[in-house]
Length: 218
Image 1: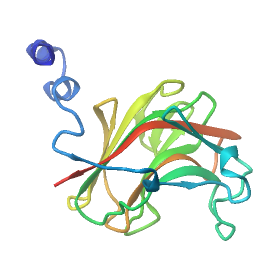
Image 2 (image 1 turned 90 degrees about the horizontal axis):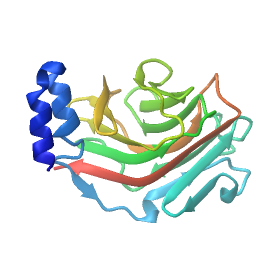
Image 3 (image 1 turned 90 degrees about the vertical axis):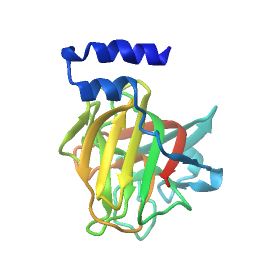
Image 4 (image 1 turned 45 degrees about the vertical axis):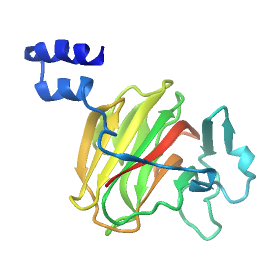
């Protein structure tokens, strides 16, 4: 069935870019990758240091809900960073190779100025990539537009980091949306949740995640 559908779309390639049609119907970001087994140990939680975890996080029926307020404390008393409630993928830090994050995200209307996914670590600076939601749109930091109209619906996010080549590619719902040069090698790991931007943030920020997976290409 899938093969017939692909054939029909490919035969209509004159309606648009052949490359885009192939991406839409015949390829998947995880093709050629191996699923890395995860346990709860791999999901390290970071939240404002002065509140109990259950006041900023829940995990019910496979859905991780993370929220934070603009006037919350940072995750560590010695940190000067913005408030966050995030999942940090633990035990799978990397410095080379080709790695991929996959997760289904949901951002409720009203959340703005919040990082919902990132690769932490870089040769220069603290991060390789930050994906923020501003008024329902996803941006690379606060600059390049990655995707639009993401409020109040589940979307599939895939981030592929080819450290050796030095590139990061972002897919939404299986379609490539953005590619950028990385920030150089470092102690790298994936994160998702909500992390307030330095400015232009909503008072309340929330994202939800399910079916989080990590892949590696061997």
